[in-house]
Structure formats: C-alpha cells, structure tokens
Image 1 (cartoon, rainbow, N blue to C red):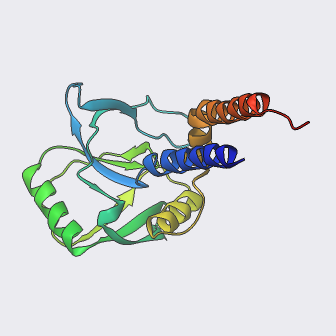
Image 2: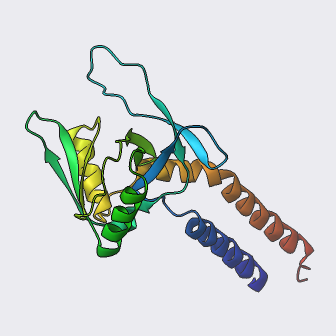
Image 3: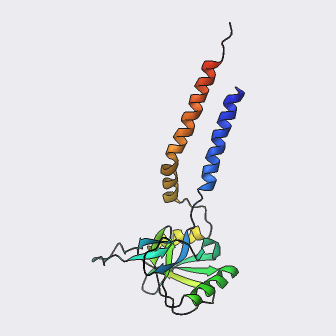
Length: 198
C-alpha cells in the first residue's frame, strides 16, 4: 500500500512540474522586425480586419523571437476608442519599462517594432523617434471586445487564456496518459506479486 501511495505521489509531482515549466507566455510582447529570415526570427502574418469587404494582401514579416519588452514592463493598460470608432489600447509602462522602451526606440530609429499580443502580430509601426514618455498607444485590427479582454489580462485579470489552456492539454495529453498507464501497470504488478493470505 505504501508503494502505491508513493507511486501516485510521484505521478502528481510530475504533473505539477510539467505545469510549472510550461508557463503561459506573456500576453503582450514588443519585438523587432528584421529584413531577412534568420535562425533567431520567425515569420508572422499581420492580423487582418474581419469586417473589410475587400481583404488586402496579408503582410508577412520576419519577427525576432526574443522580446525586447513584455507584460512585465507594463504598469497598466486601458481599452479605448478613437474618434472614428477604432478600438485601441493605451498602456503605461513601469519605471524600468519606460527606460527600456526609450532605449530600444532610440537605438532602432527607422526600424519597425512588432507588437505581438496573445501570440499574434497586430501591428508593426516604424520607429521615427525615441519614445521617452513611458506611455504608448497600440492600434491594430482589434474589436472592442478584444481590446477590453487584452487590457484586462495585461492588468493581471484572472481571465482564462482558453487558447493556451487548450494547447497545454493537447501537448501534454500523451504525457498524462503515459504517467497514468505507468501507475496502473505498477499497481497491477505489485498486487500480482503480493502473496495472498491463507
């Protein structure tokens, strides 16, 4: 019986370890656009509007995998609507984020800065000057609901990231099955090898 409990404990600890290692990616990332594909970049397609009667040609850009800033550099985010009804997100950076953002924009004037939200490329504006105010406005082909959801999650809302949850379950379903099968097999072997009284 002690062996069975030990095996079950090991299985549970394995599941916890997998969950901790596979942490949810940052909701928002700022990355540089590069001219040509490299080992450190990945192709991403700019999100297109869903309500446009004539869809433009999708723009595919080479985006550096390493983020220059992410959610940890954002102090708060607010969903807003422009004069013509276009939803956007206002963000205020932390002190460290403000310094980092000013440094990044100062060093990369003329380049494009990709704004990746929830793993999708929403915009890639060209940097024309250093941004030193610690605030930024993120525009793109958002719906009003998307800006509200993204802003809430950037602010640390407990809203569930359904896309990440689904991917996590799919990627690790086989591992969960293997662990469960191993536990059951060992339990059966243990029971079979245990001498019966009488």
